[in-house]
Length: 238
Image 1 (cartoon, helix red, strand yellow):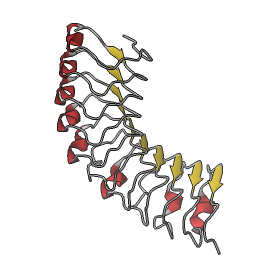
Image 2: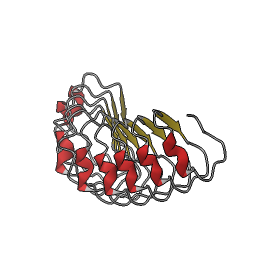
Image 3: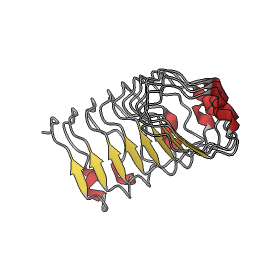
Image 4: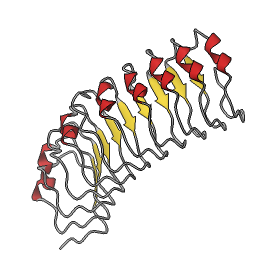
């Protein structure tokens, strides 16, 4: 069901009668909330709610046991209901451009996630809950207020893209374990050095370090044989 760009302000509670619905597209409307009955759409696999005015999600959203894709980019969310972390079938969760200031440790329940976008929010810290996200390959944490990363980030085995631009990071947990990493963006932070063995990132192709406080680059960068793009502008390189 595609209701994109229909100037909808409210979704009726009667939406629950569409029991067989697997895809619901509600992006680019004027919704300020979702009805409680949305949790009764037990066959829903894809829910698109990008670019609305949603401030709060109903706890019933946690009942969507088959939901694999949830897009809530560009809303007004500050918090997420604890029930959201019951969506264990989720493979793609996009929450960019909201006002989210906190995530629950229960984030670690989402063990099937492949793609997680949290950029442009108000996060000052992350729960140390990434250890079980073994298949996550894309993680975007750009433009938040993070000053450190949890140690469990190092446990994400399949990570290929890690975007950390525009935070307040001063040091990093060991990123050496991410030997499948292809793109790493650390630009616009407060990094004075790279305190991990860069040479371990054997598959790295794109490495962005612009606008930090780096005084030198480690020699190990020269060992990155697959590197095609290295950007280090606006640092304090000697």
